[in-house]
Image 1 (cartoon, rainbow, N blue to C red):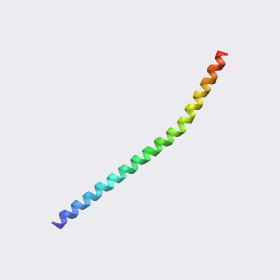
Image 2: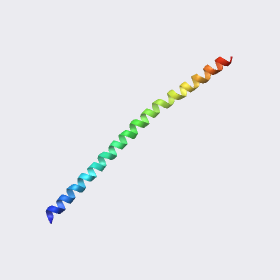
Image 3: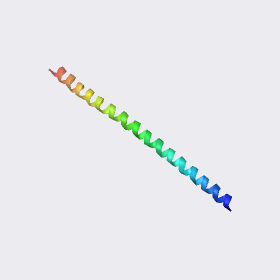
Image 4: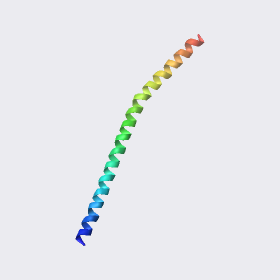
Length: 60
């Protein structure tokens, strides 16, 4: 009986480790995605303002 309980405990421990690794992976994916979005958003607004300036110049 004790060997069965140790096997169950080991399997539960491995499952928890896998869950923690998956959680860490998701956190890293989110961090990278946020970092990429933060770098893209200012560039988008810079391009947007350039487009507005170009359109005004065309009108004038």
